[in-house]
Structure formats: C-alpha cells, structure tokens
Length: 99
Image (cartoon, rainbow, N blue to C red; front, side, top):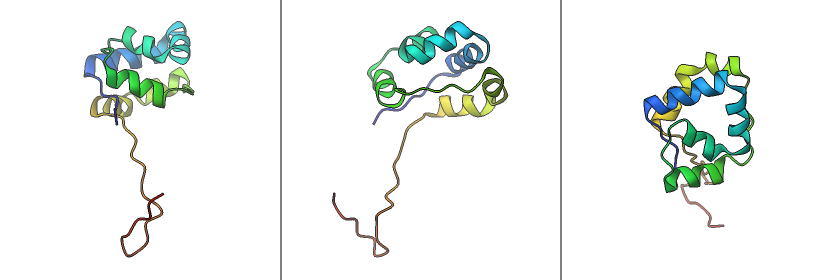
C-alpha cells in the first residue's frame, strides 16, 4: 500500500498554497496530482497511486482552517499518510474469518 510522505519544504509550500491561493485550490480539487507536483512533490508511483486511490473525492477545508491546522497538517504530511483498516470482525478467540 502506498502512502503520501512529503519533505518539510514541500509540505509547507502545499499548506501555504492551500491556505492562500484560490487558483491552486481549484487545481488541487480538479487535478490533485498536478497540484502536488506544483507544490514540489516528486511524481513517483507511490504518489500517483495515493492520488488515484485516496483523492478521488477531495473536499478542501476553507483557507482559514487549513492555516490554523498548519502544525497538524505538516506532521501528517511529513510522517506519512496511509490507511489501515482495522479488523472489526475478529472474534474474541482471535480467529478471523476469511471473506
């Protein structure tokens, strides 16, 4: 499974653009991969897979909210964003049914 992990400079530029630039926000909503590349992300297979799988229905927070959550967003983007689905159907004995 791929995950998005950006260097600090790219993460900061992305947050700056998302919190200030209306044209960039439109690009991010319509072509997330192009927007991430414009912010400095390397267009590797992990980035392409992450965007294709996880960014199909992007709804951006308003600019003020993004600016206010800068520290949390930076931490998330630089430590790696991935999705792990918990196994909620495991019984108490520890066995897991195959589906």
